[in-house]
Length: 243
Length: 243
Image 1 (spheres, rainbow over the protein chains, first blue to last red):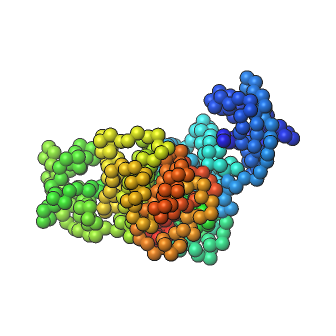
Image 2 (tube, rainbow over the protein chains, first blue to last red; image 1 turned 90 degrees about the horizontal axis):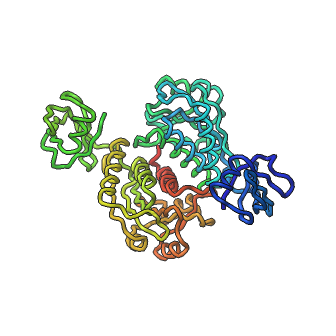
Image 3 (cartoon, rainbow over the protein chains, first blue to last red; image 1 turned 180 degrees about the vertical axis):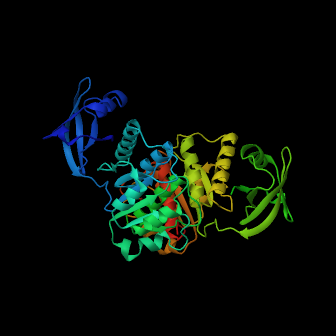
């Protein structure tokens, strides 16, 4: 069944009033009609089973027939600090991150970033990718996309414990780190992933000074856009979120 | 440094003779010249540090200056049985699977597959994707791409232990399965991933009859092309291959 995040103010008692892009999607793209059912999401964790009652040119009225608290959110809250990547790569990371349960994204600019800072249009596109991936993967809260900041600011602001993926780190692996006292009982973990050219040694030193722990992902070299989803899969697995 | 798999017969004593697509890549695309270094791979695990000695129109002669046994292969050997997906999705799974260390791929056709069987051209393209991903991620053995077979044949032929990802499986998760006696000490694991529309209940019953264990990946719904790489990341993590 189709799922849509809609603003909280769209709900009133057992009725939902859907307008804007979501109404367009329902009316013009999916061509749903009165009697069809959808699931509406309030971004607070609730799922509203809804029957479409009426459709006008650009507004859909739905009657809520059931309300359950969804299971789509992980209890592990991962924040992904991702260096800007060339566009389709970053979009890929956002989409896969949402599917895997990432709680929020913080894009940052580091020394070797070649991708340009996103325009407002681009940011809007990224938010749409996040919304669609969240609806499709049955999330019940929209992951947050934060403003683009500098690597240095990210290091200062990050919530601990935090790790940084570094292909030169040969002594500390992800598994031993996640099972260390610093990480093993923590539900909120931050993870830093670099751009196509990787981090500079200076950046790693800076991160370490901010108690962001560098960690390797084994002997194969992952592409910049593969590293984040891979590490997130492993963390979710370790935290019992992958079944 | 650029890495290339070349046929074993191209090596003779401390000299390598490179022709065909790899020579084209070196001469025309990368425009390397005598004195430049490359790493050649014999697909048996060895890496040959090689200095280019001479370049003719379509042949490159290299002098091998060092030979080491590479670290690019995992000791866990995962075979991915992947249902045919729409083209770019399948290519994505192959590329990410290679990066993550998959040992071999068996594409199969199941009831809900919408993708067509690949042409010989398409298979050649898939083999190239595997080769490029293997070179780029520093693998030292080329993952094998097997022939497309039917789901039923795959069930009969699969090497155990084997698991099948099924979104309806709510009681058995990946973590408990990988830590069960049947899987925990095994280095060779087979994993089945379905097409965009998932497996039918009948297919799951058939798989179970062949002792292929159905397993869930948690409460979020992963896209068909995300499920394989996610499960592989988790298995590699569990087996200590992700650092």
